Image (tube, rainbow, N blue to C red; front, side, top):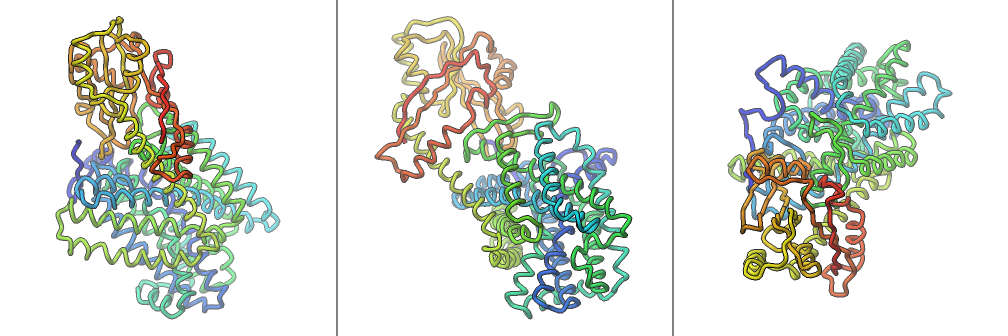
Length: 637
């Protein structure tokens, strides 16, 4: 199995050469465009929701503003800057980050804890999808709500305009985003500059706002107001949504460009904007309705609504791209059925489009907009999935720091437990909003967990049932060499999950047709617990006999297998296979319910439905359709 490693400092993984300024600064700008889109749109709604929650409960605005700002400041410093930017970006899996990268990295070194890390990985990925539904909805709605300030009569247009923007966003996915991506960085950089300027213009409205720098103000505010304080604390966490994207996008840009973008532009701009909103509200309580847009003069309102909408589309784009990437990883790790994957860029392997995922997300996002109708209602649903994902990241990070970085367990716990305690308080604060909308991400995450666990369990039971009907390959080869069947010219490739067992398709071909090809290749495609496999490690070729060859193709969980490319690799290793003269034998299993199944009847039916929805292996592995022979078998699960 390919080795998996973690970097604990010094060496910077990722795209580009960090020592060449001509390559480094474009990476920084690109990271600003892709990585920070989600967290960069939080000023549109985070402070507004928290301070309005305080105002609706008749709390003192001055005291509430200082408490909310103090909490926002220290969340951005402790959770985003220290945990994600300075610590987790160093916990890379061959240069890649994200939930599955962290899970695979932990599993590779903490063997005893592997089942726990597997469960945590599935749960973390499931919560990400809840985030992927709510982020585009709340971001676009909060941006378009600026129309109400432009002209009060435009309030009715908010939902139709938001839905129109979302239609454009999801339609754009099939066109590929590589051409658009080069403009995302400069536009988002402009967005952050405008954020900072808007806030800086108003801090002088009330310099008392700077006392929020003292963390005791935030802690005392929550302690003083009990459950109300905890509810407001949950809304404060909206300021940190998108922090997990810093880690997930590590492989695209590398650690150093992400850190530079955050420290030099993103964090200062966010803090200036939040403190500007706070000073404005303390000076003018009527600004509570929408403190973000009130930062800017009347003549700038329409340009700001347009820029905000563009920024939220970019934030939505980043989340949708992340959902595609995570889904591909889940397919490769065997957590969900195969789904269609289209590559939209010849030069960038990460640029993919998944039609079914795209339109399922589109339906879910539009449903969220129509169900909640405004950003304030959606805010109640948002924090649950983000805080849950962060708690899971912290738990998995403990194993990586302990086992990969070789820290003593007590030292790793000393580092992670403070983050866990903070995140668990925020999670508890968000759970208070369970019946106000928090049930939405929990329902999405719970449904996806159920699907993944059902698929993993069903696939394991199916493999067990299939293995009973398979013969040992070496035994079969010896038997065929001593008593050869009729041989026909050409090459037969049998796709199989177990390269050491005779595939069902081969056994049925022998049984019914009583022939074998002159050359028979058993092709097995394996997914390793590393993001990518080096080209020279991709293919292993073993000649079993004069007529049989075993080929094992290894892929990382961030790569998409391709049979034509595998055959191209084989040619370079002196195993020439003419694809035009080759027959590909695949087993098509027809699953049926069994009274002796180890799964409950409902789960059995769910697994069969999932298997029926899977992408055809011919299409998924890019096998020429006119060269495929499918052999059907019935299997009881």
